[in-house]
Picture: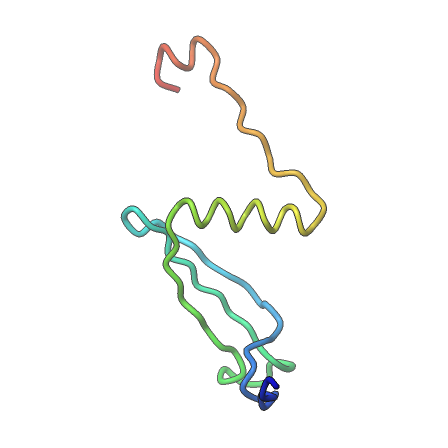
Amino acid sequence: MAQRKDPSDENFGILLGWESSPAGDRIALKMQSTRKIVEREEDVREYRYFLSKEQAVQLGNYLYTLAGETAPVRKKRGFLEKLFGG
């Protein structure tokens, strides 16, 4: 039989925001969340992750699917853009 976890040990919360930036061949992702109404700076938790570019694409596509949306399709560059590097 599985042992029940203490609910205070579970990581859950409300996503407040995120930032991402290139980190070499990876992407640095910082996410902020809270478990309650933010009254003090200590109420906001920050988590930092490094994702490969493939993981970032998979996560983005997965979230689009969960939201019932379709990921945007990249517009192909036209002849002149290819020719002049645009």
